[in-house]
Image (cartoon, rainbow, N blue to C red; front, side, top):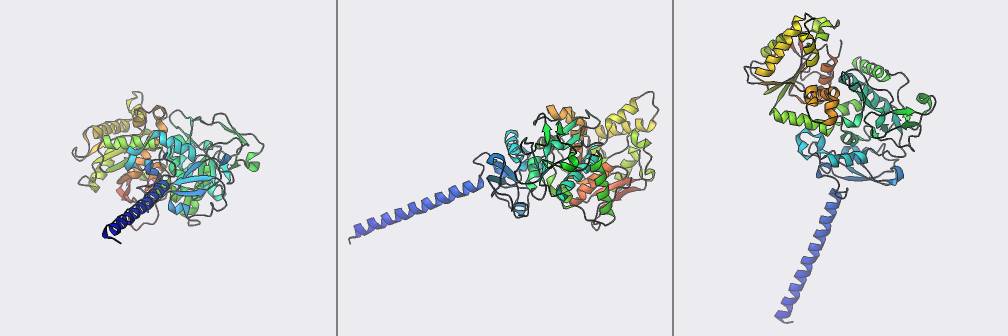
Length: 479
């Protein structure tokens, strides 16, 4: 064979090999793209890999059966996918499962897209055929933290009864001290993120008149749902959906008190469902989280101390646990200075009900010198700051919600303000509250299981560090 012929064959062979390698590379690349975008381009990359989960999570595809064999989306992590106890009996059409969205991560709110989130929400809420669905028909009541306790109770009742799905329209939060309206859960909390934790937590689903034919719902999209039973003795007989609880409207609160008492005396461990809620699953709606993030950005919050100053006039009249009360805000500030000679943070958020304080302090017919003093000091703190002006003092809550420009949240600013304050307190570097308040107790309990241990109660003797490193449980609420 001539040298030219051999060289020509070599070039052909080399070219063929290169083309073959290029072909396999393209196939591999297409496969990789397909695996990382199982939603066919509809989902953001935030749903493919989450930056706020310790281990790497990738898109998973499971075979689940949805109504009418429709395509639905459930969010889950590797750890949840490996839990087959509730998945092994589910069969049918395709369900795409992705990792928790970074819309629920406060450090990544710039990636939030309302249209994309709504698509994910509608897909995530679609009910599965062959798993047990339940509903709770009573409205939550009282302040936000008491309502949160009732929410925990409902989740635990559903879990203990082996229900995998909860009808969304039965979970209603009360805009206490505001409109007093009964408001649907998914308008205020991140349900896409929550449903990531199925099957470790029951997932929320929307009403389906075929699957849930023992209840009626006038308007499936209404923020104030009107869910009603259409069978007799539903608390005993209902199966589509099942009823959790009893006819007693206080059942969730009563069950929660029984549960916490059993935990405190060592008769049972804290519920896995509650622990998962506190550590990861329970988050505000992304649009409320956006309000929080914008607020933090506006005030350039690098670090934060939250003070729950429960010094309003109603606490002056509160008859219980007087030995733990500190009602003069100046005394609380003195305790903080005694503990921290130098500023531990750049910003202090004071949480209280300013409206109640102002009403009593400004009422000429009421002689409440302490309320007048507290309001004056509060205004001075906000205007001048702490530690000689080196630390900014701010307020959030209902006023922030009211002036947020959000059509819905400005209307329901009492509930939303409570949610804002709660999650700011949960995320703070330092929290200082009072043993007399269930709000302070709930925040410290939540923070304890998120490994946030800088928690104090102010008491007449000074600040009491209630969650030092060697403590294995949060303080008991005794008031």
